[in-house]
Amino acid sequence: MHSNEIKHVRQQVVLFASGSFDEIAIVAGGCDKNGQVLKSAELYNSETGHWETLADMNLARRLSSSFFLDGFYRVMYSLPRVRIAFFSRWSIQM
Image 1 (cartoon, one colour):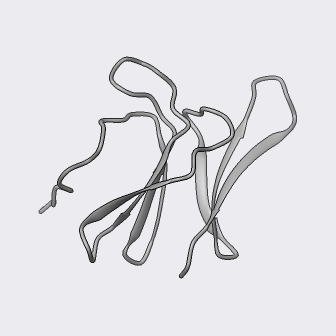
Image 2: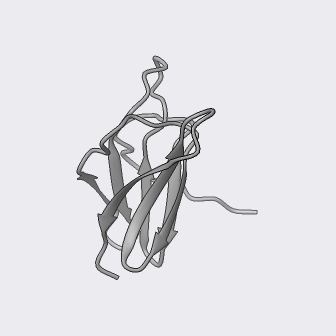
């Protein structure tokens, strides 16, 4: 088995949402090395090898789910004991 490292990750993050489509990968939210819950999102393009900072989510999130749908990258999050799902979304040119 062979793996490649992505160079120059802006910060180390765990418990993040992620999704990919073709050469694009996006990571959103999660926790930094100090346990701070993040609302940031970043896009990585494997063809160019560059990271791009996206607009922040409206709420800091960890342990979220994400997906590409209808030209948007969406991060879904629900609160315990609440029957409402919250979304952040970014328009992605595919």
